[in-house]
Image 1 (cartoon, rainbow, N blue to C red):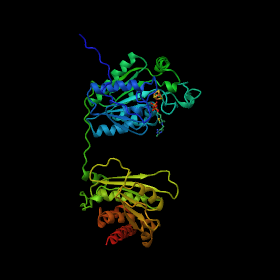
Image 2 (spheres, rainbow, N blue to C red):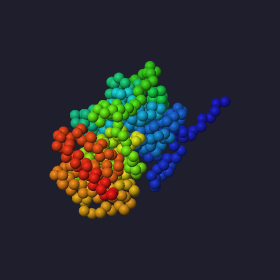
Image 3 (cartoon, rainbow, N blue to C red):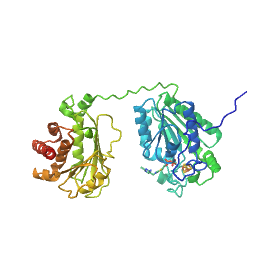
Image 4 (cartoon, rainbow, N blue to C red):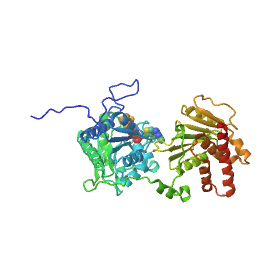
Length: 478
Ligand SMILES: Cc1ncc(C[n+]2csc(CCOP(=O)(O)OP(=O)(O)O)c2C)c(N)n1
Ligand code: SF4
């Protein structure tokens, strides 16, 4: 006797959907009649059936798709608008065992992320992309998307999309089908049970090829958005059948999965000597400088340098990062080019690590170098308790507010002026950093200056600046 079917939530979903406080507990985020929930279920069932919940990673971007992060029993990364294919690339390359899926709406994938998806497909990244085409921006209230069809009224095309002014609906599957690398491209729909079954099959194929490391798969899914189409759920399904499908014909555009062989991408290896050679670091020296014994407080520093434009903030950061490289550390340097006010703060983050660096921004720095008062007031707030604040006492006439950090008042601009050139204040700051942290030797920094400055006079002047900053703080210790 056949066993009765047991209807239950697939294990590819988390047991409990967490909502924001105050939200009703027994409903999803999606509007009634929305296609997202159906597609979620098809993916969740596949995660269970393929037994990959422990190695599936979902990349959810911006749009109604973002809510995927609440539902799947899988790893999840929420990423900026349109960037899912780039992040999926990184995750799948760094961890080839992971089954990486990107779940994107049409505004996200075809507009702001248009180039990302084309490039990821062209590289044949081993990812499964689920592309929810509802012909409109859902989350933001119904603006025109690249996939909006001709004549369709949206909040930004109130008289209907006019190709003369707004272009034609973009057929992403056909576009990607012109590329060499993808293995699987299909367009399906969620408007009735028969097509949901076909979507189910396509979802499984895309996931299967990703598990088998066959390369890039994309399933474009026509999906209802009753709220922004201003229709009820049933009319939305009929509208897909009668109006959307004639523009976006359904079917498998490409299926090369069975003939494709498992991709064996070379796993990137890190050879510091090779990197030094290629980057020309160390004036052709193959070996890194001998590391110094560093107070554990300053091992793996996360540094924020801030001041106003013209103070050489970014150069000071570059110099510190470059010296870190010379010692064979991993380093990152992240400038901030925010729309700063004149006289406000410009800043950069530098990280120096023995191990790998995840996030390049020093969101909770262990060392802050503040070159002017607005910078000190802004960045001492985020300094890690027990961290170190080096501040330019020439221009900052107030005491730092934080009492739980070590503070060093160094007249950085004054020292540079004493050397006859205010511009070298950035290198005074580098010297002070080296003196306070003990991370770099004075001679080691000086040895790099010829690679940074063209004229001998500038090299000499900057040598003096580094030395003066270094000597000032080491003198304070005594
Ligand atoms: C960089 C950036 N630009 C714009 C937005 C605003 N925004 C949020 S969702 C969205 C549209 C998403 O539409 P779509 O990808 O079609 O997804 P849907 O909501 O229809 O599922 C936009 C423009 C944003 N969050 N970030
Ligand atoms: S706005 Fe549209 S896409 Fe977003 S949840 Fe509602 S119906 Fe779905």
